[in-house]
Image (cartoon, rainbow, N blue to C red; front, side):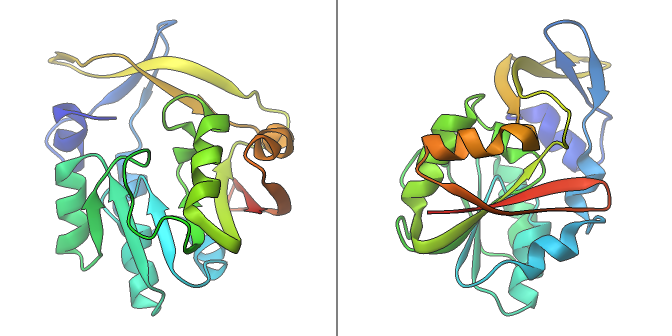
Length: 205
């Protein structure tokens, strides 16, 4: 979700859809990322020690962790999202998860919330990177889709009434497939839970 349309949506300037290569369109759920949403509490309660929030967006989880006294860093590739996080009091950097990340190998908790397991369109590769970021005994908290859904990777792009931006890969992971994907990264599903219609898994090394 890189580009001007995402930033315009965050600023409340224009409604934006996610368009799939097969023609489907769904609204970009930007309001879910701007303020606390149902299901956040259980996720935040499980964060322990220094926490890296991957794809932190405008920083609602990064900020909430800081307010709880949990040291947290958000990383995101979108400059305006990073700016919003900092304005709200969060510590955030403009950084791609596959680039150099401060504290690599020392994070106690790594967050992949709001569907960010889909970053790059290859969840197995992303989880390999997550394992590199975690310290021994650390955990990754991953939001997934519920039982009976389908793990898939799609070409998607952002579209508004005025036009669209370039295509990029994005994935979703079903809870039923999480164990097999985690194993590719040397991780194990230690727990899973659901809250407010959202599904999550805890992965450990």
